[in-house]
Image (tube, rainbow, N blue to C red; front, top):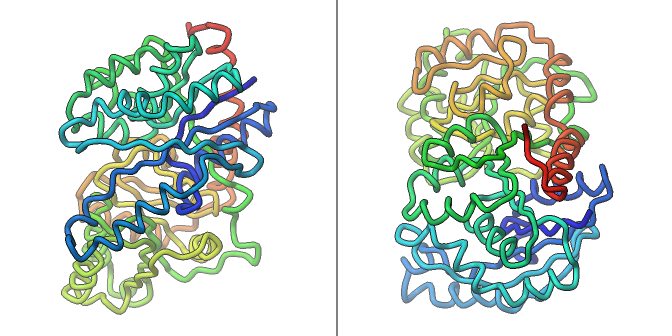
Length: 403
C-alpha cells in the first residue's frame, strides 16, 4: 500500500530532531507491512514572534532564519523515505488559525499535486488536525484519495478548543475517511468542541522499547525523582518542588529532584527551591542527549509528571519502559497509560498534599519494575501501533467503516 504522509513536524536539514514520532511511526508501518511511504513536510516561512521583538537588532538573525529555510533543497531522503519540502506562510494564529489548513493547501498545491500524480498514493495520512489534517482533506477531496487523520494531543486539546474559526477546520476534517485519536481523552476533548467523526478509532502511539530499557547493570536506589518536560507553567514543576519540601526530613535529606528540559521558568524554579530550603536537592540538567536521557531514567527511583494538562504523554511511557514507576496528575490521557497501583500513583490536579503523599509512598515502596516494563511491552510498542494503524489504513482504502 502506498502512503503519502503530510507532516510539518519531521526532520529537516536545520531541525534534525523535529517530529521523531512521525519518523518512527512511518518506519514501523514500513517494517510491519511493507508500506511504501513518502512524506510532504511543509516548511513554514512565517518567522517566530521573538525575532521581531528585537527589531531592528535582530535583522541579521531574522535573515539567517529565513535563509536556512529558503535555501534548503526541495526534496531529500531520510531513512530511505523520500521527503518533499514545499514552502508556505501563515497569518497570525490568534486571528486565522482555523483557516491555516486551507491556506497551506493553496500554497503547496502545485508541488503536492505533482507528487500525487507521480506516486499515486492509496492513502493520505496526517498526525495533526490543523493545518496538516485540513490540508490533507482538501487534497483527498481534490484527488479522490481517502484520508486518515490523527489527533494526538495539543492540536485537539488546546488549539482546536482555544483558537478561532474551529468550525472551518472541523467542517473539512469531517471529510476524512477515518479520524484516529491517540487516546480516549483526546477523543473526548475533540467531541466537546464538535469534532465528532462518524468513523473514529483509538490507536495508541508506541515508544522505542529497544532503547528505553532498564539499566543492564541492575537498578540501585538513589532516591532520585526525575521529571522531563519544558520548564513552563503547564508542566507545573513548582508543585513538585512544593510537595518535595513537605516530605519527611529523612527523605528530604537523601532524595533529590532532577529536572530535564529548558524553558522560561528556570529562574523562578531556582528561586523557589531556595525559598523552600531545598535548592541543594534540585538539579537542573538542561537538555541532555538521547543516551543521557535514557541513563537518567534508568538510575532514578520515580518519574514525576505534575502537569496541569497533557494529551497522551510519551515521556511517562518511556519512563515505564525503563521500569520506572510514575507519579502523575490524574488528567487527560495519563490514566490510560499509567496502570494503578502496579505502575504508579495518580493524584488530583494541583493537590500538593496528595502529591507529597504519593512521592513518599513511591520512594519507599518496593516496585515490580519488570512488571512495569511488561505493561509497556503489551500496550505501547511501535509494532502494536503499526498493526493497529495498518488495519485502519486497509479499512480506509477499502471504503469500510467501523461497526
